[in-house]
Image (cartoon, rainbow, N blue to C red; front, side, top):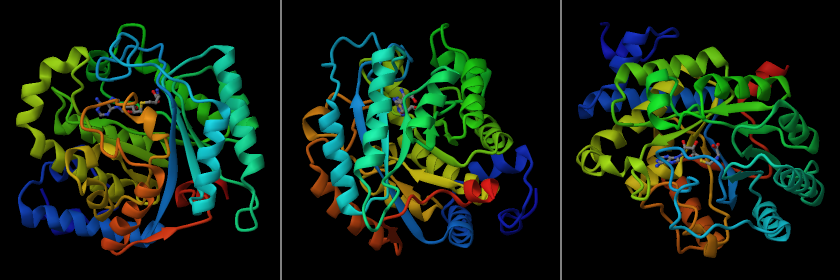
Length: 365
Ligand code: SAH
């Protein structure tokens, strides 16, 4: 293996090199990796952090993913679905703050009423958030799971332009372990393909620290991101939720907390080294593991954050994992808190713009 200082400056990486970089734990080595990723982030996408206001508009879900707190079989949560007016209130607030984009995320449904709700929400947000500073309205990212090609085309026609669909793990073995037999890696790949064909900027990602996941599996995930030529990445640590079948891993995961947290940061850094000009989110799950997790994610090369806009009363019922932060806070509190966090790590907030990744812009040109 080459010396670390040479490795982090490469343009092409082998699977072994990626796995080696991901496994760095010693403080001085981690700092070499972190600094290289932060510098590449500045060089390729700049020092701005773009916000995507996150509206979790429903926790009703037809899926039963083994890891997820809002899975169909969890009967201990109250199911909710925001009204279109509640979504619009969040969108207006988002636009007034100058946050350039919004994410609509929910549990998965594929019925016509659901599809129409999303379509209407997208249309109204685009039409009603036009301002002098943002004449095209808010940028919209959807995160509503596996749908048909026709549905994706309808969402795109309504005016959404980015879509986040995590692969969760590109390893067939782990994907199987995480999902019931009704879900397949092949179909998820098909969906990602359809999203690209229907004209979306496509984002994907994985959970980090899944029981049984190796550094080589994560290296394969990064190579998978590259082969898919994705525009954006959203990934974070796997965190146990007690009301799921994977609660059995609670003690194991608790004993690995520090290791998984560092691995998640290393994943951000190495993804930045390999993919360079994509958008990478510092996700809320990082903050669930450590209060300063998201801003630390920024210092490892992330450039996107997703402030919570879900009305406070519904947040407790949208816990995909335990320890989700900011459950009692409102949007204004989140805004102040985030501003301090971002300026605290020497970054600036990109306001009134969509903040598409340079990768997406280069590809479209
Ligand atoms: N249903 C939508 C979006 C909701 S879940 C979809 O499937 O895209 C958004 C992401 O949360 C998932 O892709 C998953 O990676 C993450 N997630 C779910 N449960 C989690 C857990 N226990 N720990 C960490 N991340 C989790």
